[in-house]
Length: 227
Image (tube, rainbow, N blue to C red; front, side, top):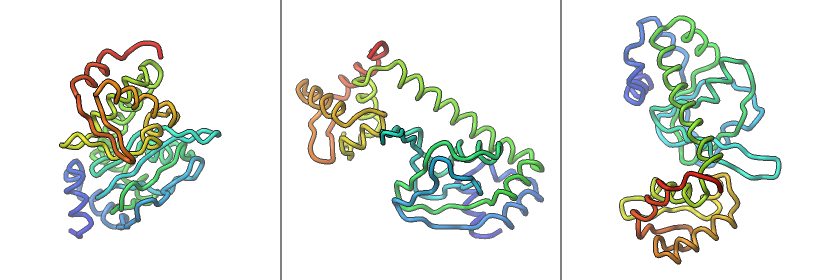
């Protein structure tokens, strides 16, 4: 088995059960690639020509409005797949958002023909693809629910808690946080100032330090309702 297949089996354990013929098809078709942080993997409206499996690094998938506003739909990390890629390949439609390498990437690229052959001929590969697809759709439904029904202060509180490292620090600009939440930088800046006034966080250039995680958690848990 090739070094690439070893890494694929390590990052995607479900593929270890591939049938012998499917394993041979994948090994013959997949090729490794490396991409630098900041690389645009695909744009809204681009055709999809391959199924990309992330071995190392992270891809940010985001939707950009005509006015330039952005909202992060999800991230693709090792062991995960991109639902927009799967959808585009299966339905033969263009991408509906854009993908950007947040870090340096190591990937395995599975050409469109190889993907279709595996999908048609391997029960194991089909389960792998559709299980990942279903999980990501559930995540997107939760995102829609948050955007539609949760207050921006509660969503920001949740984002800070989930992005904070072990020391409570979130390394992100106000603009990056706004992009993550599909909001405006000015709105996030005002909300962070309110959190600071409450003593829940302290903000500096490019970072936010969570000082009272319990208060942010209470705000998030009680934050459903009108904006």
